[in-house]
Image (cartoon, rainbow, N blue to C red; front, side, top):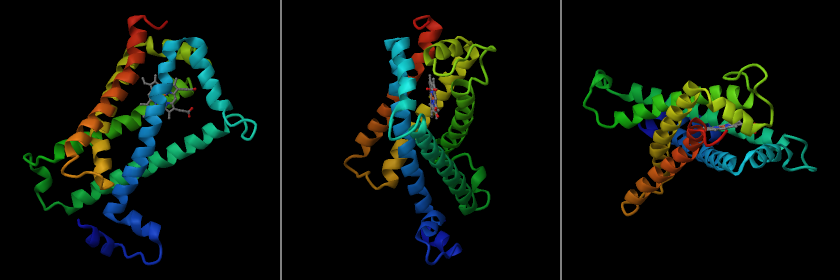
Length: 241
Ligand code: HEM
């Protein structure tokens, strides 16, 4: 469906934000901007995780620092909560826009078109949707696992703020490590296409820079993949214990 056709279906005089949200391009911009915030978090988190290679003291102190930062202006954990709220809002908007755009796409397809096997563009899009779903499942599991210690640990094994010990114990369980590695593969694919799409939506792709932006997206996705999987692999290999 074209942008103008979509806007006509939802006449929203007066409220600019609603007008942006109800248009196809508006949803794409919301996906691009929230995606950018989420990518920045993922990069910061990946770099933070690498502190585990500097030893227990370093990474456990980092976990305390994340809660104490901003003191005395901010109370214990307040900045962390602010970051959590921003991330949650971005994730909800990102997923909602993705689901709605998918539905709009399906509705806009001529009858029978959705069953065609020869439509070249659907491959990337299908990977984005299933990969995105896997990532959503992963994040829920991950929060229950390393933030809450509610799954994947024997009773009494998980200790709040003892990130090093928690990560080593958590990744000593092979199926859990494998799940993380597969999920990081999905994240890599999602970012490879997602970063590229984000640049396109924001209008930064030109004929001259298309190839460089594709390479850049792939490179960032691979660096994030390698950075994240280095932790479970190091635990499984016995380099971190
Ligand atoms: C091998 C990969 C990963 C490892 C080892 C890892 C490790 C951790 C650990 C140890 C924590 C708890 C930190 C603390 O309590 O101080 C944490 C929290 C978190 N991680 Fe990951 N993580 C990984 C991948 C990811 C990915 C790919 C995402 C997002 C796409 C993610 C999102 C989060 C979030 C949202 C939190 C909660 C932060 C909070 O509210 O305290 N993680 N992670």
